[in-house]
Length: 96
Image (cartoon, rainbow, N blue to C red; front, side, top):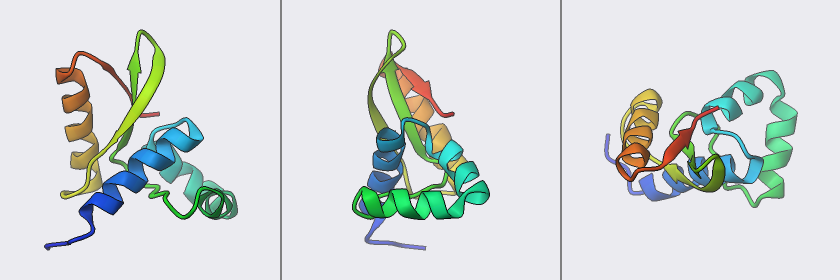
């Protein structure tokens, strides 16, 4: 399925992970357990939070320096692509 909003989805995965300090897979689990919290957090950060795998925090020497978001396949494959890319850049990925 084609989508002209892949950037916004990938951005929301990465931005949400960075905003809340955990990978978007952990955000998905939290959304399942505490949907009101995730809805409120989404509103607090301007709606840019996509709580499904594919948003991975980037660390350098255990210090979070950013996040990568991937969209275009299923969420597990999106996350795997982000992890591979981060590793190929010589950095550490944080999915949880």
